[in-house]
Structure formats: C-alpha cells, structure tokens
Amino acid sequence: MMAARFMAFCYGMWMAARHPAQARLWIGSIVFVQAVDRLVTVKYLALGAVTLAQVSTASFLPLVFITILWLGMPNADHASQVGA
Image (cartoon, rainbow, N blue to C red; front, side, top):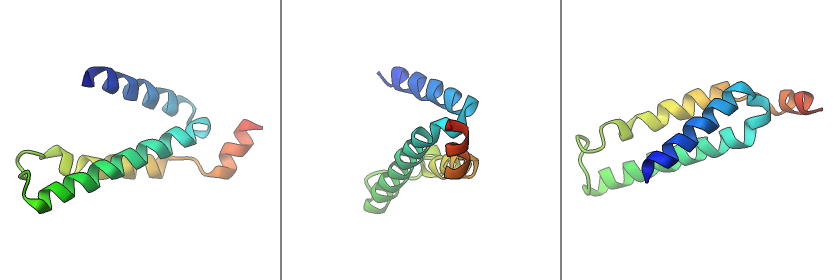
C-alpha cells in the first residue's frame, strides 16, 4: 500500500520540479508533511517507544527534505508573474 503513495509523491515531485512556480501549494504541503513526520518521530523517540536504530533515516531525512524544498521554492512574486 505504501508503494502507491511513494509513486504518487515521486510523480508530484517530478511535476513540481518541472514547474515549481505553479506548484508552490504542493511544495508547501510536502514541507508540512515532512515537518509532521519529524515531530512525530522526535515525540516517539522522547517517549522511548522507538529507538534511534529503529528510525535511523526518519530521524534526519525530513530535515533534509524540508531544507531542499524550502530553499528551492520560488517566492510568491515569481509565482504570480509566471501565472499571469
């Protein structure tokens, strides 16, 4: 079941990379999803429900994705000029 989600995310990221100014909402949504992933991972690590070994990549990859997407997202002025 996760394969379909991953394929959809991959397709969405590919489309957003082709037209980032038109995909600002989608990029922002993915940043939000990654932030929630990070917060939930930290919560369960703090509670001791999981160990760092169990969530090795989930502990840092959301920060990588957030940084890349946030820095690569065009500003609102550029998006409005492209859409006009």
